[in-house]
Length: 139
Image (cartoon, rainbow, N blue to C red):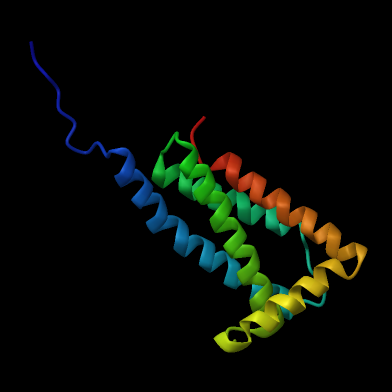
């Protein structure tokens, strides 16, 4: 009996590393890009968070091809990083000093919790994270 050996098959750890290698640059790129776009425009579109979460999830699903929960968690974490990075770029640019990063987090928190619009923005933020969580693995 002949045995067919697939030399291109990746194990779970290699697929997770592949998802990391493609997911991290995607999250950073989308976060910085949306941060600059929302900095230029006088109005922000919070629904973009859902699209960013969807794109991050699709990249992890396509290149990671994983079925474990760790792929979903990776998608949710990377989406959260992209969203926070976009807000930091929106309010402070990329020239943020690490010493004042704590103050930046406090200011962004006050922006979100200061009005009903900020709370609605947080709902879109959560929706984007859930979208990334659901799209990151093959179900």
